[in-house]
Each structure stands twice: as structure tokens, then as C-alpha cells.
Image (cartoon, rainbow, N blue to C red; front, side, top):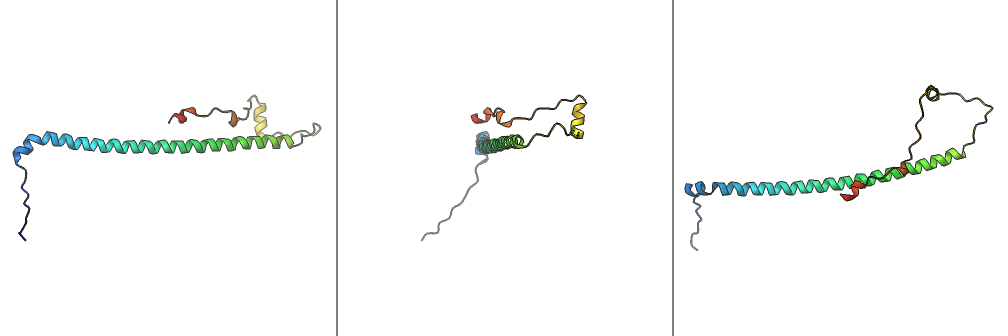
Length: 120
């Protein structure tokens, strides 16, 4: 067997002086490509997260709507107090009696859904 050896010779300065701009552009292009790829992955992950949060939000709204329906059914089953017995005023009702109007309860099932998320 012959003795085989590889010798690396450095590039001559003239080559570096002639091609440094092309090498710099090549390196910048590679870095921008990596950046765009990572940014695309991040955007996809954020979209997935938004979709899962929206699904959770819809499920929670459905649970709240069911709870409101159950509460209305429970309220309908409670017997009405007789008018002979005077009601005791709570601090909340006394505040309302001083001129502040009570807000009606929110009907969560009737609220519009966020349609802009379906386009993602």
C-alpha cells in the first residue's frame, strides 16, 4: 500500500477578495431561509393553539348555557312566596330600590359565535 496523504492548502487571498460578496450573500440567504421556516412553524403552532382554545371556549359556553337552562328549570319549580309574608330586603335589593336598574341575566346560548376563527 502506498502512503496516501491529503494536504489541504488554504484558498489564495485573491479568490477570497474576488468572491467574498457572493459568499456573504449565500450565508445571508441560508439564514433568512432558516428564519422563514422557523417563523412558519411558529405561526402554525399558534393557529393550532387558537383552534384548541376556541373549541374549549365553545364547550364552556355550551356548559354555561346548559347551566342557565337548568337554573331556569329549578327556578320554575320553586314555589312562589305568599304575598301575606313581607319580604326581607337585602342590601343588594335596597341599592336597586334607590334608583339603580338591575341588568337582565345574560343568555349565553343566544350570543353570536366568533366566526372569524373558522377562517384560520
